[in-house]
Image 1 (tube, rainbow, N blue to C red):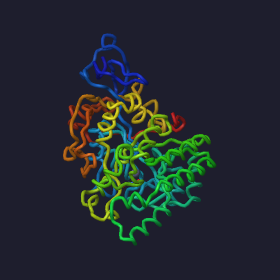
Image 2 (image 1 turned 45 degrees about the horizontal axis):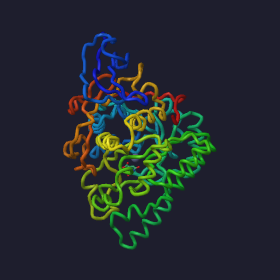
Image 3 (image 1 turned 45 degrees about the vertical axis):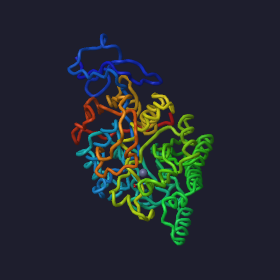
Image 4 (image 1 turned 30 degrees about the horizontal axis):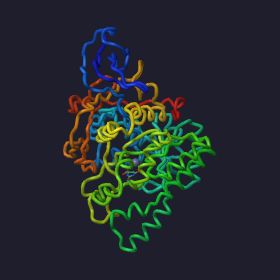
Length: 454
Ligand code: DOR
Ligand code: ZN
């Protein structure tokens, strides 16, 4: 007798989509096969007509907690995750206090442990303030590090190259990967100053102030430092065709690196910048057109291994201002990623197994969570997004679960959606209603020896 069987669904297992029944006990997958060959179960979830995917692992979210809980908090952010089929989130360190030492980590961990519906990992920041604490943070179970090479919400320092290099050398010895916001700060600041002096406040000025060379140069610089330090890095939110080229170049040099892009870089462009203005102001900027094409190609050929959302909540007032420079940077995305990307899969952009590689397997591999997470296999955590591939609807931001729901995806027509979400065998969303308990989520325990590009 096992706790649960998910019966009759089409499961994405490796490169195949197969009809399979999945037995779960004590939060883990214990058998996969046909119902007749499986043990009895205390509960059966009928997944007929539905697809069973590994829950998404979003390695880039900003829950703002502690510090800016008027923007988001662990309960609302993780509810959005559950509603979006996301079963593990990794939270960025630009909170208040920044996650730069043991005390700050303990404080954030208390919030996450008490409030999260889904499993979670916490990044430490890599800057001059955290340098003396890197070993302690790793000992305390940090999920990874983040280095902001340019300005950010929370105004954390952008460390100079000396600090970055020493940090990478030390993280290399610890075997821990570092996510990098790779944008050149000086070029961007120089151009922005000129635009402001010229009186520009329009939405396109933001994008024009951060030309792709900002990304190319920063990826080139940080991967050179990583190579010299023998460190593992991860390029967050790749936004440009030139950025993709810089990654290809570094990979060819043998740099231990992974990279992510986000749905807004893949699917938005100048029309959205013009119509949605501050709502799509984000760093790095949305570029669209040939850049989006290059990002799709990079996902399909494996140069960019994964998608993340960079879920970056702000209030409606903070996102809407006729002066683009006054609009906070970032947008929510946790709850819309899966419907939006599955819709692209249905349009023929990628197979379902490719989507699962980008949304679950690759982040699990990069952040040391595989084989515990990121796939459907015996022994893995029973983390699932059970999705309806015929669930057409129009995204309505008022139905989202984030504390601040202003979303550039509002009104978009999608043709698939998660209906049930399970975290370690426990239902956290049932029939599109979030039913999980705050505190169910657990901290993830990365195994750094297994971290890889996949
Ligand atoms: O636009 C952004 N906002 N980009 C980032 O990388 C950080 C994020 C935030 O924290 O608001
Ligand atoms: Zn971010």
